Length: 166
Image 1: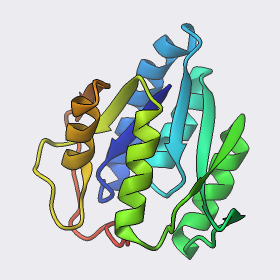
Image 2: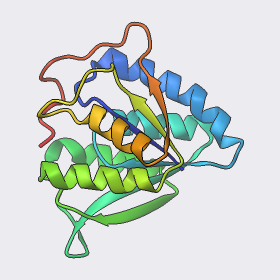
Image 3: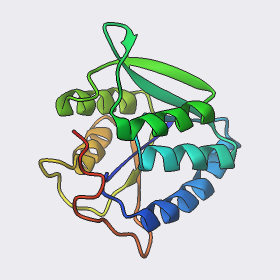
């Protein structure tokens, strides 16, 4: 399986660049019978899902549950979840609270442990109190998971944009 991690504050034009780059990279994986795995959310997860579909890669979306019942998603993630469900061939339920930052990080770590490869949309900056991309890259590497960093020319982050993660 292949997962994606990355900054939540990617500029809209960066998401378009990333989607194109992901599509090209995922097309090579589709022929090898790999599957994409993504935790539901707006922004990068949707770009990954769209790229996986265009590349012919099967997609699995992870949805949160609380006490084995699908968890209520924030308004901003609901339409993203709907699109990802339509793009997915399979849905996995994972017990975590989508409103709890630490629970989301733990869910991301569990998702990564199920993967052989991680595509990291990362500008190389250290983890901050809000952005955990560097942490997830280090986590994957420390668990022997192959990490490929993507940061195309022209990619930008917009401070505050999409960062209301938790």
